[in-house]
Length: 121
Image 1 (cartoon, rainbow, N blue to C red):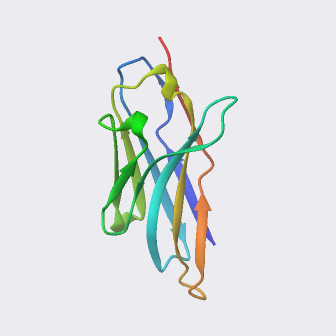
Image 2 (image 1 turned 120 degrees about the horizontal axis):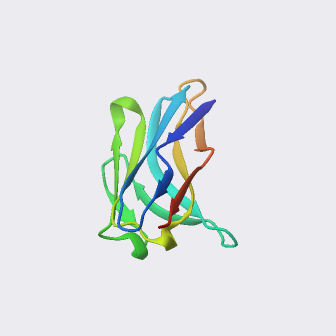
């Protein structure tokens, strides 16, 4: 079983910055893609950014140039640096990790518990 623990959410003023972290632990043999999703009140969950094991990144258009996703493979951790935050970035942010377990070499997809990001003056 693989667990994800997120941290770094909070309240920030427009134009401010936050850094989210998501650490994976448990029976992990390898991690492939890691990503961040968000869900605003009354809206569907949407992908925000993702990063492959090779370091290739993708971003949704609304965050390009403002958010940066990165990963530390030694720590099984993915980060989301969010700059120039806007009120429309307010949402619950969840991390998503795909990989293979060390026990049984089975594929897994795990989700974090979610962390609230609120951008408001």
